[in-house]
Length: 152
Length: 246
Image (cartoon, rainbow over all chains, first blue to last red; front, side):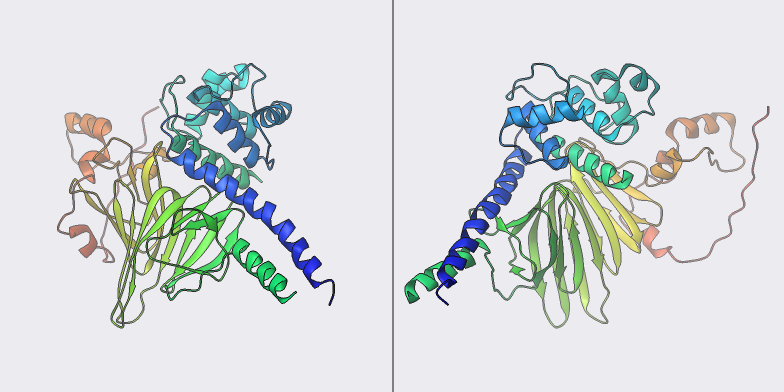
């Protein structure tokens, strides 16, 4: 049994990063839930995780989402306050919402807000320029993920 | 060498923290990212472990945790944070309260013989009492508190004195900033192409009902539990179908 310490050490080496990574996301969710203002960086990270990617940083996550057609290819900064229209655009693109006539024609942020309201992803009749809290972002993303699972 | 084994095994045990306590909250299963916190930091939630009263449980994206609480089942859905506010079991009673900070849960509560069972789900704005039934409860800053009851009957109340019995196809929805819930039958009305009016009403009354609808009909407080006492009986309802003139 000479190799036992080596096996245990190997198991520890694999277990530590895995546990740390999992706890990293949990700490992110816990902090996000209490944040009065969410950022574009938070939304990008949360959507990337929803799409099955665990990005190292904002740029990697943004690049991934732009490639997937979920995030607009425009110069957003990680620390920008998150507007309802940005999340609505991401949700509508990810879920391929097309049952709002204006959104199906223009596919822009303004009509994405209407489409998300009509589909119960976010409350209807809210302003597209509203700044969202971390809790609101999590609630919306939970609905998006549920809808995506249902579609599948 | 023995010391090396011991320290390596201890380190592994720390990574996969298992808490052996005498609590009645048992983790039945987990999926994806699930964690609990009974001190300063979050730790991975593991199938088979127990958590104490006062502990918090959180799930991540596409994740889930199923808890057995005194033989009742609580499913913590994705992106949800709960706290075990009360967990007490005696020979004569089972008393549990779960605080739902955000996200959604499904609770299946059994009625076990003569055991007095109290199972409350508490959100920042409302409390629901589950007994021998199943309910889905969600809460968040965007949509507020919402309670649906697939089977059985649930009482939902808030600090403003609102008390509603929810069951069947009715649902309790308290939007952010509102003290009064929306109509219990709002979902049905929104998905219906028909409107129901009492017979023999005047034109003005009909207009009033179209504007205020079921706020007049079923949106009253039920502090005496009148609704609950009438559930389960039989009644005859006469309906006149009036088709619109072309």
